[in-house]
Picture 1 (spheres, rainbow, N blue to C red):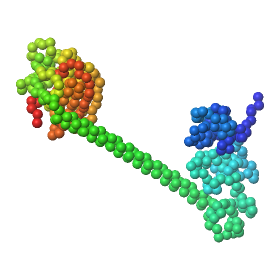
Picture 2 (picture 1 turned 60 degrees about the vertical axis):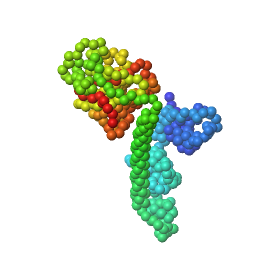
Picture 3 (picture 1 turned 45 degrees about the vertical axis):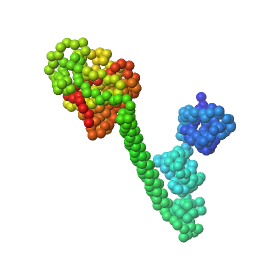
Picture 4 (picture 1 turned 135 degrees about the vertical axis):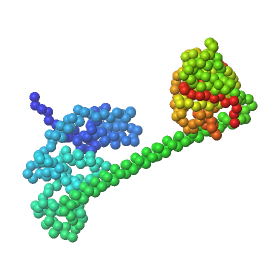
Length: 411
């Protein structure tokens, strides 16, 4: 079967009148260069086919037509014509020389179809001055065009230099080509440097915006803490400053009591406590004797190699469950490097803006507020939640090789 033949006109874009580049076919059936149809529809509310004027209610999706793209690529390959005697040759081709289709006045080169398209892609942001292919021989003197006249911006031969281009600003064609290549190289380098500077500026602005947001968040937290403390100072409701004691009946056997049940120390030796149904036998933790009702505040101080957990919990919690790992308790795990809040086995890593071994706890049982503070010369909010408490609460603690002191007085 004879192979079908195609012409360049069949695969030309009706907008740029050149061979299709990244061809796309719109719903009416006509094909265009992706960039051409995109430019035609840019900032328009009505989308029409430039050829048949068919109107689309919404902008059609543009997808590359791979079949047409393959046919255009094949046409380009077969359409390249080997330069014959008398033809203008492509200056870029190595080996077999193809017939030039365009000459660039600025590059001082002639290009075949393939190299011309590369040239156009390279300078698509700043179009060069193009013309039909020009011969390297002067049509008037039949001499090599080895001189470039900057005054008239054209290639000339030596007889032309002596004749009509006398006293013009001229250089050798090779010198002009080298200078323009150097200029383009400098322009590309300058463009790259500008892009790098802009990218660094944008990164610096982004970092500054991030720091500003962080600072605004810290200010909001401080203002919220201040407002809460101010409310506590002026409220008509009494705030109970609790003086807690540890409940020996709930004390795990690997905890040792001292100083009138206000200090507990984790130990490797089990203590001899009497059997009691309230004792935590599966977890190294303990309840306080005092319950929490209304508005309450208390402080604890801890030290040790690992961590301690400060908690509020319903008294009905299973004696084999850790505080914070169920929906009946709320816990703040404190270590030398981090704070972690946990409720219903959901872990929340907290930022450490101010560290202290003394922790303040505020509970408003009626409105469901629980707040933890880092206490030193000042108070800094660590974490606050708003929830609904459905049962009475009791302070509790988990120990991991630590010592915990319950404060009996407050500054």
